Amino acid sequence: MFMLTSEVLQVPFDISTLTALFWVGFILITFFYQTRLQSYLALNDISRGLNKLGVMKDKARKEAIDYLVTVGKAPNDPTQRVDQFLDYVTIMPVDTDPSGIMPKIDHVVTTNNERVRAEVGALLSSQGGQANPVTVSIGENLLEVATSLNQIHKIVRHFYLLGKKTNSYFTLIQLQMLMPMIIQEADALLNAVDSFKMGQPVGDGIGPVVVSRYMQGKEKRVIAKDTVMAITEYKGRKLYVLKADGPMAYVGQPGVAIKKVIEEMGVKPSAIVMIDAALKLEGEKTGEIAEGVGAAIGGIGVEKFQIEDAATTEKVPLYAILVKQRILEAITVMRKEIAEAADKVTQVLNRVIEEKTKEGDDVLVAGIGNTLGVAQ
Amino acid sequence: MSQVPGTDKKTKLLVYTIEECPACGQKTKRAFAVGDYVTKDGAKCTKCSNQTQISLVYAESSKPSR
Image 1 (cartoon, rainbow over the protein chains, first blue to last red):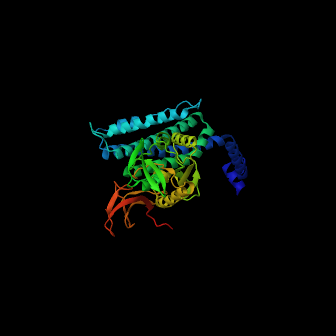
Image 2 (tube, rainbow over the protein chains, first blue to last red; image 1 turned 90 degrees about the horizontal axis):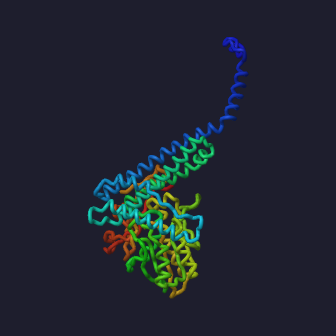
Image 3 (cartoon, one colour; image 1 turned 60 degrees about the vertical axis):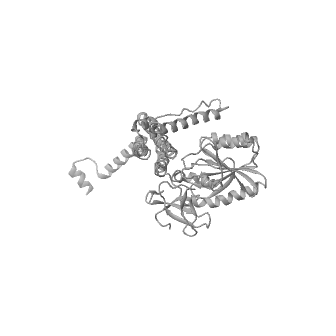
């Protein structure tokens, strides 16, 4: 049959020779062009992810503009200002001589935060009027989400185009491997938009939820920017309880507040207890509580530095109570498992105070996190 | 009722507000309404007619957990 075919087709070799030639050709092609082929597949993969990121950043931008117009009642069309805002950059101080860098970072970050608030306030307030602080804070957070997604999209696009232009196999493969994590983070940011718009407490707000229970009915005073403090008592201990000023979407300045209580008010606390949300590892359960020592606070590091500095100077032990959650759960509406951990955290906090301090002591308790939807 | 996408996109999360009576401890669960926040005054307690307060706002999956 095979011989017959070659005879009919008038070719000088049979099918087995053709098969052998095919395999030799295939092996040669994959040997010499394997990386090109993989680069091509990686480019396709990244391109799909990039399109997804593009859709996400456009959606976040649109949601921010819609919020400013519909809820914020912006007197003028904010589109142009929002677009300018998305490309605004924060230049971090030089770190080749790191000594004394923290106050410089603090200064740059504070300047940026004040500028954002002033811009959003100006966008929302009609002539002479003052915009609602909750609306302004939500507007700030929505713009930050849109800016973050814009930045992520720009950086991924940069490496995609660079890899394509230089035909750099390793650039493309690294980017391809990182894409699932990048998309996951971007997805979490986009999901946060819904919770922010509705003014719902987010998972990160578990610290403020617990602390607000100790502040109810007590006189509150502003101790630092966007941060309030109340003095209360628990089993003979004087508690200095602080959190960001809610129900605005603020994180406050707990570092400045703790420093002020210790250095300016002359309080010598026997312990500082911090309650915060912490990112869980895969396999850990959402809402799980972990205890530890050290400053439980995230962010760029300025607040952590200030708290550690004040605690070290006065030799005050730092205790941490953490509630585990995923990044998506931390920045979107608080899940039931996290909310239900509030009672357990209160019990742990009471136990820590009882075990680590004695009657007549002063104790500083700080609820760390975004306090959207959580007043005091 | 406020609905947000769940973690796996197939489930929807329903957001609830819990009102708690500081006098008798009775808890009432209702759908979240825009403007609700923790420590805000809620409705009168159905048991003792005291002023309730919002103690929690949280989301749970619309699918019953298996």
